[in-house]
Structure formats: C-alpha cells, structure tokens
Length: 287
Image (cartoon, rainbow, N blue to C red; front, side):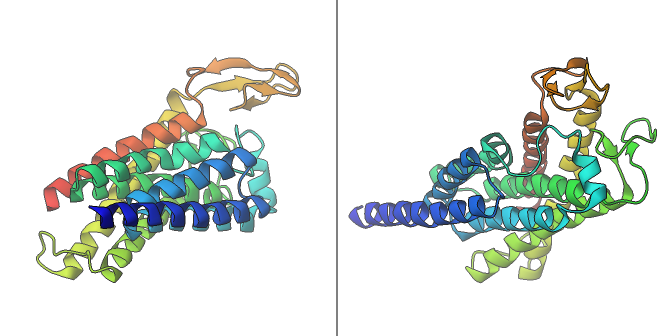
C-alpha cells in the first residue's frame, strides 16, 4: 500500500513538472493563451498521474500535431480568410483545451478507478474525433474548391460552420487514423497490446486504428452537422458579416441561426462525446 502511495505521489510530481514545462513552452510558442496554458498543465498532470503512457501519449500527439499544422499554415492567405469568421483563432484558451481533452481526462479517471479496455476505446474515439476535426479545419481551409454544406450540398464561403470539402474530409480521416496508430504503437511499446478478436497482435493494432478511423470520422461529421444546424451564428450589425462571434466590429451581433449557448467549444465537446460512445461500442464488439 505504501509503495502504491509513493508511486502516486511520484507520478503526480512528475506530471506537474513536465506538464508545466510543456504548457510554458506552448505559451511561449503562442500555441496557448494564459488560461489555456494553466488548463493544459492541470490536464497533463491528471493524465500522467492517473493513466499509463498511452493516455498522455495520445494527448501529446494530438496537441503537437494540431499545433504544428496551425503554426505552419498560419500565414497562408486562404486559411486567414477562412478564419475571419471563426469564434476563436490562434492561441487555444481554457475553453478549447477542456472541450478537446476534458472528456478524455474523465475517461482516464474512470479507467484508473474501474480498469477496463472499453474506456480506452472510448478515449481513442474522443481524441480521434477532436484530432480529425482540427486537421480538417487546418488543412481543409486550404482547399481550392469551395466548401459545401454537409446537409444541402450548397456551396458556401470558406470558414462557414457546417461546410465540408474533399480535402478537409481526407484530412479528418488522416487525423483520426493518426491517433489510432499512435495508440497502437504506444500499447505495443509498453507491451499492453493484447490480441483482440482477430487473435494476433497485428489484428489488435488494426482494431485500434479502425476504431479510431470510424469513430473519429463520424465525430468530425457530427461536428459539421451540429455546425450546420444548432451552432450559434450571428450577423454583424455593422458590416453585415455572418460569423460565429457574438460580438463583431466592436458591438453585439444579432443571432440569426442556432442556439446562443451552443458555441464552437460545446459543438466540439458534444461531437467528441458521440465519437467516444461509438468507440466504446466498437471496442465492445472487438473485446
């Protein structure tokens, strides 16, 4: 019992130190705001304390890859134009950090209390969805073809909530597969990759990747559906722009569609929860 307590304190301290340094570096690199950095430090500490390497490794893979894409594409004119109407751009704040990783931390805590592989499948689904959505946003904004609304197929301006492109959809699939591959590699490296229904380690790795691909892509499209229907959209009273922002041109904008409470962060959270449930179901079928 004493050994377990000592290990818990060691992991807590190690998580706090490493997560704080990582958050500070992300803040200096302008990937996180002050609130985002504090939130990332708390979240990272929780993952290291409660979870095995696959849990915080997948989180790191999501953050590093998404931040790198955002930083690389930040100066691209097409992306800048698409971001003009986004609710949030640039540095991730606390709301974005918790919307992307909060559900995953709860799943990590659940696994620490009631260990079961199903929690990991759900977590992979959650992280695959948020990574797929982020990659689709970052890369899809560079598409040369105009996006189409996911429900009607009508062409819309770049950056419109609910708009999708072939490039963005391909990026979403790639982002989801990336999370599944990282999870499979980490499980194999720590000798935690147990044979699944296929009966082989290769089959088990393929199961995680397939679950991530299916749940992540479904979560990304659920995000687009919510963006096209329930997400709050506003019209600026000054310039007439349709935007996700409740305030524009220095004043309050008029709500023209959706629910005022359903902003981009909550859309991301709801779609990731849907993907997590799907990942859990896929895991249950394979276990």
